[in-house]
Image 1: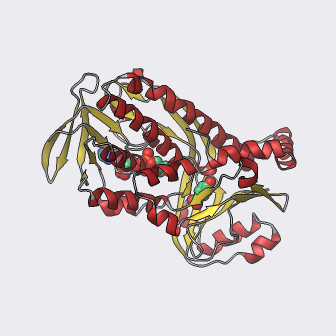
Image 2 (image 1 turned 60 degrees about the vertical axis):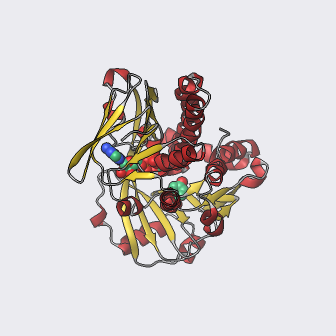
Image 3 (image 1 turned 180 degrees about the vertical axis):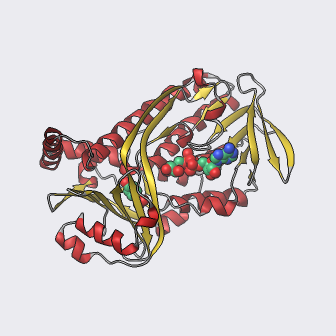
Length: 390
Ligand code: APR
Ligand code: PHB
């Protein structure tokens, strides 16, 4: 089999790239390790920047998003038992974010690709990348027990942090930058109405908490937990009690609890692999970088990487110019590092660090007090939260 672009991974990055390429008349095949249903079973954050929504609009996969997504023009920071609203629209000249689960974004893109007869191989085993240092790369994989070969002009590694694409690059060719945080997030999904109509990012003496949502009837809550924490040590009751302790009295009182339909612990790390291009192999999304979820940048960075990669591949295939692919890594990394900075900053501001000195505690408190007392500081937070320009 032959295609112009072999895409590894049917997550948001791979699927969005596939749809952009399709629209430009550039052929692609997606090779996905997991089944269709497994990919759609993943629970992921869903705060979409306007740029991400714009890309979904561009490929015509946003009608359900506009019908069901929630437009948010602010969120609360809660500390010292007091809630402070960050008015995104006022601080950014009218920008907002859209609350719409990543799972739904993935579903919409998958459905559209299938409707357009885009080629996606699910449960593709033993995917292996070959000769991406030359001009005739190819990918091998196992489908229904048969080893197959996909010849291509370009490979897009959209296979996430644990994927095969970055792992196929010699370690000597990669520069890795990483920070692992001394805590995780214990998350619960429940079919209960959200405690507030907007998100609440809370920093209490006992740790961070986040009150989020998927809709008006489905809520998503997180509490900071120790790195070694085990999910089975947390009954629903214990989770709801701890969440209440990290909220102000009014919010704790208003909290509607119920049985969890999903409960999991996620580690927090900042990670960047440089560069993002190796000959005819291009990394995009979590394959190249990871952010702590505090700033809700993971999906949105995957989208901006794909925007830059799509522009580069269009120049390569349509205009026969190498300029775009030569500039891809530098362009993408410029925005990646700004989002890494923001995610690290908000994580550092809102979490309790186990080894924190009394001085560091006072500095963290002063940072919060300054932030909510300065329009300039809040504007800086807001412009990063809604998404910096591409
Ligand atoms: N071969 C084929 N597919 C693979 C392989 C492999 N060896 N390894 C991983 N995959 C698939 C995964 O099953 C997954 O469906 O690649 C896809 C990668 O998707 P994501 O991990 O969602 O990464 P990305 O598309 O970059 O989206 C980033 O997703 O995980 C969240 O927090 C993350 O919001 C961010 C977003
Ligand atoms: C979520 O709804 O899962 C979510 C929202 C905002 C974040 C992180 C996660 O910053």
